[in-house]
Image 1 (tube, rainbow, N blue to C red):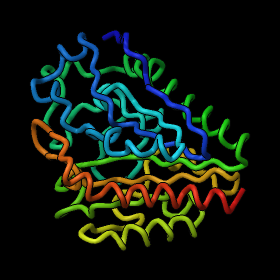
Image 2: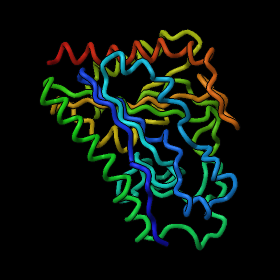
Image 3: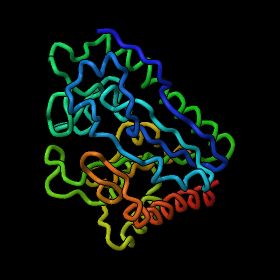
Length: 272
């Protein structure tokens, strides 16, 4: 199978402060030729990190740069290593070019339509590499300008997903690569904000410790700090079709997200 796309791999807005917000799983675009191979369910791209650009709408006012994926994670997962190695060895995970949904239903109507090595490489060249090149380029620019670079990798997921975890997931899941991707003092400051968020549960380095982006780009010893936040979608949206944004629910969690991003910026100011 061949692969091509006419959609740019990302949208980007450059800010003025030492913070980049990355949204690698918000994309919904599937090129028509690929969508034709998908099941009806897969065409709805249910495992999208829906509405995060709207939820984090305050990021621009904070002066953050914002990098937003355009293609669905079903095309290629930007938060996986380029070789497709598992981020959580021994646990059930989805791959670089997934073949099933989070509910373990097939993406492809015909198993013969699943991508081979050549198509995977073409998707990687068209989407994965440009996104990561822009991410690295912007972090380098930020560090050169400010002397420090902060990366916030924004994610969301259904609150109940037996494939990946038991019971209901905590609402605010902070990941720092088990302490390797950012200064411990920053991680504790963020956890304190999450713990103070009345009505929301939280954890640091629980089931989700940060994906490839956090682990690869978080280099605190070089003045580059990365944090992932995996949120429950029930905190701000409808978790089933039609996946509507719920403004009243979103308004409840947004102030806590804003406090966290402000804490990241405050940390950067003290370390410049």
